[in-house]
Structures are given as structure tokens and as C-alpha cells.
Length: 225
Image (tube, rainbow, N blue to C red; front, side, top):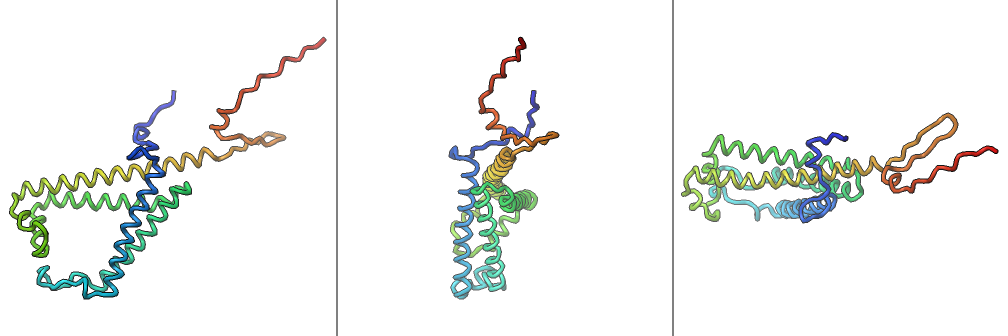
């Protein structure tokens, strides 16, 4: 009997909305590309008209502008890199090339680690939420109401919000990982095996085709008169 690994229970070929993991990875890659494309358009418009996206330093309580040219250039380069990574994941899922999905999977792990560090910092330094709210502009929606809340209740709400985000991101990571495993297993099953004997070389079909092939009856034994 074949031993089943505990990790095999986490491997599935379907994701949310009962679609295939390949379809889910393609949709996820296209969605990320659309978001990064919108961000890139905003950054390019900020480069063309920087005065429109600058706020006075009094509103932020600092001596720095809200956006400067150096930060815009860095953010633009990151957006272009993200568009390329998401495009590689979409192409890899569509063409069933698992190596193209690895950069996007690594980005998901990095993003999940950053969000986990944010949750840990909220637990270790609960006063950081109040400090962050004080640095927000005065016209930020519901700023006074949020700051008037109990600090413990505010930390609890923030942790629940971050926990929901982490659970959703973990599910998306699992979908992309299952797509990577599915493509690898599909490609490995399509490899034809050559068996070489002393005189001839026999080409064996894939396992799925071999199972579907009809079984031929053996010839009758040779009868001598």
C-alpha cells in the first residue's frame, strides 16, 4: 500500500469559485498586473506634474515633502518589476512552465513575511498605532474617532484585520504552490521513457495512455503433431 504524505492533503487542483489552480493563478497574475499598472500610471503622472502630488510639510508634521522625485523613481522601478513578475507567472501558468511561476511565488512569501512582521510589531509595540495616527493628515477620515478609542480595543481590531489579510494571502500562496506542483506533475507524466535492450529500443507511452490501452490476449500455445 502506498504511503500518503501529510503534505499531500494540502495539494488540490481546485481553488476558490471551484476553478482550476491554473485558472486561479492566471486570474491572480492579471489582477496584480492591473493594480501595478494603475500605480505606475499614477507615478508617471506624478513625475510629469510633481506639484500636484505634494502636500505641505505642516500637514504631515515633518520637514519632508509627501513625494519627491527620488521616491517616485524608486516606486516606478518597483512597479515595473512587479508587472514583469506577474506577467511571468501568468505566462507560466498559461503555457504550463513551472519555472516562470517561481519569482511570483517568492514575492508572495516575501509579502507574507512583511505583513507578519507588522502584526508582531503591533503586539510588541501597541503604542505605535497611536503614533502612526498622529502622523496622518488632519483631514484623514475618522481620525479623531479612531484616536479616541481604547488602545487595547484598537490593537485587537487591527490584529483581527491583519489576521484576515494574512489568512487570505496564505490561501493565495497555497493556490500558486498547487499550480506549480500540478504543472510539474503534468510535465513529468508527459515524458516518454526509452527502454533499451540488447538489440532494440522500445518507446514506452505515458502512464495514463498505458492504462487506457486494451489488453491483448496471449497467442495460443504451439501444438506439435
